Length: 274
Ligand SMILES: O=C(O)C(=O)Cc1ccccc1
Image: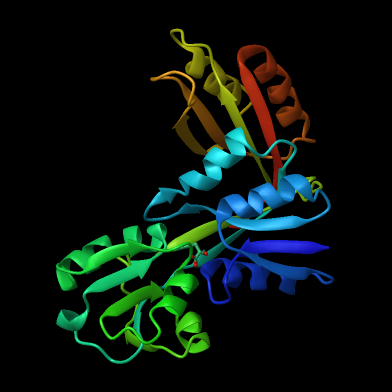
């Protein structure tokens, strides 16, 4: 079975993948260039799996992943979540002083997680985005004026120097990754269920959904809204609740939600990471 991740080698996605497959065997690892490439590939190759970042503790949701799960990922389910600590390094081809760096390149999430560091130390550098942190590190080779933001393993793989370590604006920085497949995970007793839904544009409609969770004494661990992309001011909600869709209480909730939502997608149940 293939498992796709955001490459090339040395990304944070690869770190999460290494953790995931250390618990399992028999995967053929395939790197892809972008997160949309991974989700599109999974829609074609139904037996394969893919690992994508979904949320960061500093920057919040990875919108490209969420938007694709809402709009373009029919039939895909979440079967696992993995949370890893994220420590960013400033990396260059050789040891540069801050004022020698004219360009800083990385994945938009990494640039955002180091926004204050860049403003403080590299105020005049041009900021350039890359498809991944490891791609950024691979691109600074032989550029005496450029630095990348990525992890220490990427610096080692691409033969570059670490200029500074732990440069993210909040030291305790974590990213949640999800594994997508054609089916979710069986009941483990310590599970979570992810849902996407929209509600009618009328007073109290979201309240009436949340009230169902409260009545069934079910804990909600995430709520996020995204534009529906249909009409300005209309939103789709992503909600995580504790419990497995096979639990009686969750099953009952899903039945009730079907009658109260305009659109409902159960993204799956999977073991809680933390
Ligand atoms: O570009 C990477 O290394 C990724 O895996 C995406 C990402 C970027 C920054 C923090 C977490 C994940």
